[in-house]
Structures are given as structure tokens and as C-alpha cells.
Amino acid sequence: MIILILRRLVGLLATLAAACILVFFLLEILPGDPAQSILGTDARPDTLLALRHEMGLDQPMVMRFVHWIGGLLTGDLGMSHTYHVPVATLIGERLPVSLPLALISLALAVALGIPSGILAAMKRDTWLDAAVRIKTQILLAIPNFWLAMLLVFIFAITLHWLPAGGFSGWKNIPNAISALILPAVALAAPQAAILARVTRSALIENLDDVYILAARARGLSPSAALYRHALPNAMISVLSIIGLQFSFLLAGTIIIENVFYLPGLGRLIFQAVNQRDLAVVSGASMLLIASTIGVTFLVDLAAFLIDPRLRR
Amino acid sequence: MQQSLFRHRGFWIGAVIIVLMVIIAGLSVMPWMPDPTIIRVSEKLRSPSLEHWLGTDQLGRDLLGLTMRGAIASLLVAGGAVMLGAGIGVPLGLIASAHENGLSQTIMRMNDFIFAFPALVIAILLHDTVGAGMQNAILAIGIFNVPVFARVVYNKTQSIWTLDFIQAARLIGRRDISIALLHVLPLALGTIIVQITIQLGLGILAEAGLSYVGLGVTPPTPSWGRMLNEAQTLIGLAPRLALVPGLAIAMVILGFTMLGDALSEWIDPRKRNGG
Image (cartoon, rainbow over all chains, first blue to last red; front, side):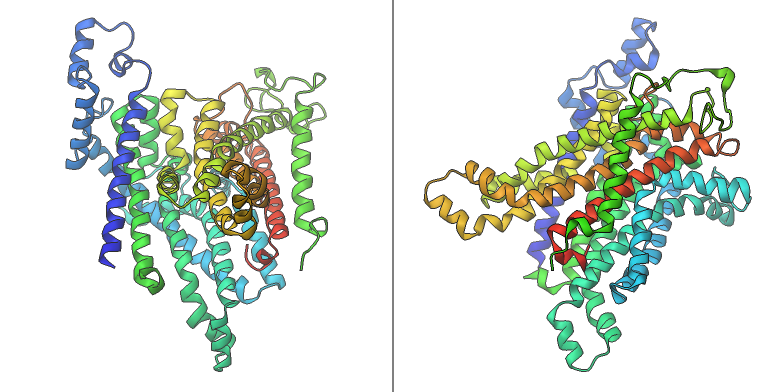
């Protein structure tokens, strides 16, 4: 058990290291000189040299890589040249928007998706099952940013129930939450559909298994057999999907934040891409990638703890 | 119980939607069609009329024409990304499944590694190197497709390699590569086709998202994602500008999803209960 976890941990660290190398070199092979593109083509040569020195561009690539990795390990992601603030501070300011948004949408997706999946599995091959199926197919087909625009049109512009965008911080909690409702619903809708499908198929797979037949033979009612035996087993595969979805949602906030003008990680990344603020791009990308890798690891770990079969 | 594919309602709905999309895309570039990219500011934001069936946008472009032409970018990006993903992923999956050794381990590890990069992050990282445009979208979505195909082919073919007739083929001296192409790949073809359908739908969704945030197809090439981006600020004024391209995206993805579901039930009837 402990050896298995340790082995996973080594794999996690190796993956993170490989991701660092890849991100660094992807941004390193960029054509052009970042210092030049900051200052423009008519910059004076000595200013250019000074900035190149300040950014460490006059050092060899290996040195810069070591420096960058060292920074990552100590939480120093470098300076943003557009904001003149450390990248870590910038990300720290933006996370209180993106992280709650991702968590609220995940909670919504779980609360809507899993019950409909259970319902569809219980009423398999009835009109209810078909209705859930059609609903999930439609939700999967709707781009979340389009859904977001429709929600803004209905609930903000026409009905004036909720704000159309913007975010004024967590000091006023009801305001903050009402600003996050529409984006969270838009993000959650397709994820709820995925969860409903996964729950349904995992449940049905387990319901068809012999141990459910045995439970029924012992006199358990169909719903007791489902809730006590099939559901916990089905939840193992559902859990791994939820883990994937969290990282997906965190990255998905990138697009949705642009619809609602939310000052989160996504807006930060986009402004940075457009202004060629590479320190911000690499730092924020690394954060998203690391969170994906980390969550996958945690989900694996949870599966180990829940499912004794995996421990063998 | 093997159900005939042609009696499956979802198959027909999906197939009709996709065939219609291809026809519409083809029609939009016919020489007799007016060019939808021509800007006529004097005719901006016109309501639907006989001349402009769906009205015009903020630059006076015909909304129907733009939407029809937008199908091309969607198909090209999703198709290109699937070709890239399947072209690399399928051979990788086959190689990894042939022998359980260091090579196969490495391939599948690499897969999991690439999977840790959300397609959007790939697009952002590539953006500065490749630049915005169709090639950036195809590359980013295609890279994301590679591990998907490799994983699906690996899972499907792993058990095939241990079957008796494969062992027999090995005994008579067939080389791995000819066994893979002659015996293993045909058995995995159904699974691959289903995955192609699914990834085409996801690719169209991803293309719309990338173009919406400006990382995909660039103007003046019409693209549904771009159109939605431009419609956003006008949604109170002219909601049809947002409704039409959004509906087009949703319909096409629905088509691919239904087709994919029908095909996967057809090749694996047990999926009638799963899926």
C-alpha cells in the first residue's frame, strides 16, 4: 500500500518536472526578443540591453531554466512586466475568483448530474431514461460560453435578476455570489450532463453484476440493492471523472471569465497572452497544469482508499 | 440482440444533420453565392428581409451567408485535428498494445502526460509560436486528440493480441507490423470510427471556444466562435446575431453525439445498457 502510494508520488513528481521543461521550452522557442517586443522597435539600444539584463535574457538558456525552476520551487514566478508586480501576487489576487467559481460549478454539476444518472439507471429503458438521455445529449452540444450569453440575455438583460458581468470582490458576499451564479451555471451544465451519463452507465454495469443478484436473492429490495451495493461501487468511477472535471473547470473558467468580465485567472492569462507577458503566461499555465496533475493524483489516492481491489 | 444500425433513430437524425452541414458548407463556397465577408457598413444590423433572410451583422455582412461559410472552418479544424490525433494516436496505441514492455509503458506514460495539458492551455502556449489562426487551433486540438486515440486503441487491442489466431499468425512467422495491420487494426476499426465521431463533435466545440477567445480562426474567415464573440456586446440589441451561430454549433455537435452514440451501440450492443 505505502509502496504503491510512493510509486505514484514519484510518478507525480516526474510528470510535474516534465511539464516544467515542456512549458519552459515551448515559450523559449518563441521567435523574437521579448525585451524588444515590450519596448517596441524604436527602443534605444542601451534601454534594450538594460531590460534584457533585468529579465535575465543575457544569460544562457540553461541558467535561465535553472533560475526559473528554482523560482517555481520557492514560489517566485518572476515579475510581470506589464503590471510590475510579482506573478505570484497577481495569481494570488485572481484565484479567489476562479477557484470559488470552479468549486461552485463542480458542486452544481454533482448536485444535478448524479441524481439524474441514478434516476435514469433505476428507470432504465423507460421514457424517463430516454428523457434524461436526450437532456444530456442537448446539454453536451451547447457550448458553455454560448449558454453563458443566453443566460446573460435572459436573466441579466431581460429580467434584471442577476448582474451581466463584473466582480467587485468578496467584501460584499451576497453580491459576489450573485456575480458568480450565471458563470457557474454555464460552466456546470455540460459537466452535469457528463456526470449523469457516467453515473448511469457505471450504475447499470454494477446492477447487472452477480453480486446484485445475490443481494436480491437475500431479500433486498431493488432500491436497497442499488443504494447499498451498486451505488458505492459505481461511485468509484464517477469519482475519477469528478477529479478530471475539476481541472477541466479550472481551465474552463478561462473562457467563461471572458464572457462575464470576471477578474480571474482566465482574464489574467488572456491579457498576458496579448501583451506577451511571458512570466504571467508560464506561471498561470504551470498552475493549471500542476492542478490537473495534482488532482489526478489525489483521485487515484482516494480510489486506493475506497476500493480494496486496487490495493492488491 | 444486434439491432440494425439503420433502424436506429439517433443514427438517422445524426447522419442527416451532418450531411446537411457538409452540403451547406459546400454550397457556401459556390461561385454563384454572394461573398459573405464583404463589409457594407451602410447596411449594418438590418432585420431579416427577403434580401437578407437572417438580417445583417454590425458590419453589414449577411448573417445567413456568414453562418453557412462558418461551417467550413468548423469542419476543417475538427477534421484536421482528428486526422492529426488519429494519425499519431492510433499507431502509438497499436505499438503500445503489441508487447507489454518498456516501450509500451513509456508510450502510455507520455499519453497521460499530454492529457494533463488542457487543450486551451496548449493553444495558449502554442499561440505565441504558431500564432493565432486555423493552424493553431488544429494543432492544439490535434495534440489533445493524440492521447485520446492512443488510449482507446490500446484498451481495445490489448486483449486482441492474446487471442489464439494472433498467436497462430506469430507462429507462422508473420511480423508484428503485418499482424497489427492485417488482424488487429480491422478489429479495432469500429471503436476508432466511434471515437472519430466523438472527437469531431468535441473538435467543433473546441474550435468555437478557441475562435471565441481569439486563439483560433482569425478574421476575415467566418467562424461561429468569432461570430459569437462579435455578437456578445450586441446581444441586447440584436440577439439573433448570437442565436444563429450558437444554434448552428449546438445542432452540429448534437448530430455528431447522436451518430457516435448510435454507432457505439451498434458495434457493441451491450452499450445499449451502458453508454
